[in-house]
Length: 539
Image 1 (cartoon, rainbow, N blue to C red):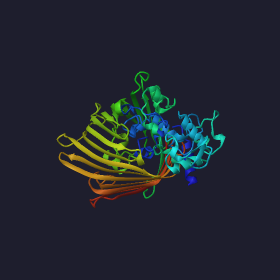
Image 2 (cartoon, rainbow, N blue to C red; image 1 turned 120 degrees about the vertical axis):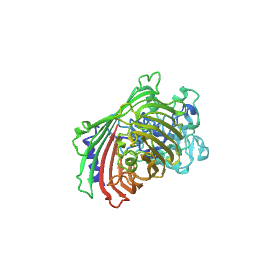
Image 3 (tube, rainbow, N blue to C red; image 1 turned 30 degrees about the vertical axis):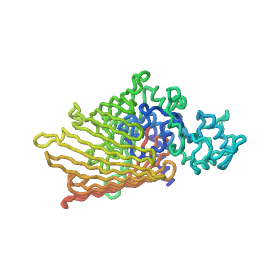
Image 4 (cartoon, one colour; image 1 turned 60 degrees about the vertical axis):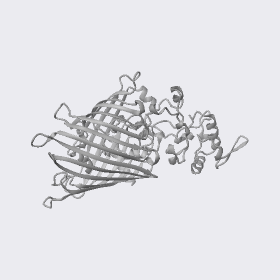
């Protein structure tokens, strides 16, 4: 295992200054239980119509559809949580905050007194002045109700002055408590912090519990936000005569510009460019000299009442359950093997007030007929809960493609239904989807089928995951000799691991086996296995 990790760290060293990021639903499941992943714990709340707090894709991405440039919230989260070790370079040395009840900026004298007293003992009861403090009369805004959490907190914060700041206040980061295990404290909602339930009666009151570099304040004063994504891919065929390859696969560059940030901080222009490369070209310079296209260009007005938004332009509308791997059965069949370049002209309206969310996207044909001529709509409705990181989402897609017509020049219709969900239980993360696709091949002649997907991940150490993905299709996928969506069946199994060593670096090793079996026995069965490695960098 150490040899494999070293190999990936060594390979990523040569490309570290550079990443295709698309929202991965399992990460939303992973971090939904951690409210401090987006903002400072123990802050006061805002009235419901003014809250931005959300568990939708926009929790971490600029686009409400997910993917693309990560917002200040997304960068804040990945820099502090989506990594196993800390960078020792400028602007990446971000330490994980302690749980809210051990942080020094809590604006409550009683809270500080109780936590300070806890630091002097190693038990459940303690002396605070002349009286004995017991779990029954502790300040519930500061001390968790659970006995396990109280005992763990006391053990973690040992009685020693070196864990205190220069002025006697509590320090705020994990390195100030060497050797302590704070893993169980990273699920903020598990703790009885009642400040979440108190609505600030003024901006000044809300601001009093919001640090200067909190994402909420940064998005209100920063006029430019940039992002960069890069994937370096390696492929080793196992049961075929194809050659192995190791090549720079994708580079994405993105920018969010807020021209009127001092007056209107929720209006922005977003532009993203994507460079793609073929496995045939393995030199690094090919990543910017191969195919280049507009990944997205849109106007966005967000953070309106009840966290609603309006966006218009060129982008990929949300349709669950998305994965960055465009070779999966679901992505290949749904988008005709071109999901990596799927872009629509659309007008989108939606809202995401905390747990529930809903959005609708009106798709229009592009003026340039060389590009998408789809027309129709996509609708999504669902919810993500803090409890267990659970989610349940239904999506519907109905379009007519002006580029695909029958003999009478009628644009052919394509529809899709998706029901997906996820849950995190202890260190296990599960995501599932049932995707039904129907495509017209001539007026009135429709082929349809269902692709079922099950993803399972296990966090074995820090941000090191074992993962397995299984897909089953009751139609042909078109990888072999059969026409896509003709009678047949297909399966795809992927197993391996993901490792996030430091912020902005994602390393993976996978084994993938794909079979595509047409019902027509005259056609050959497609059966391929391959080993895959990937260095994925994002900033």
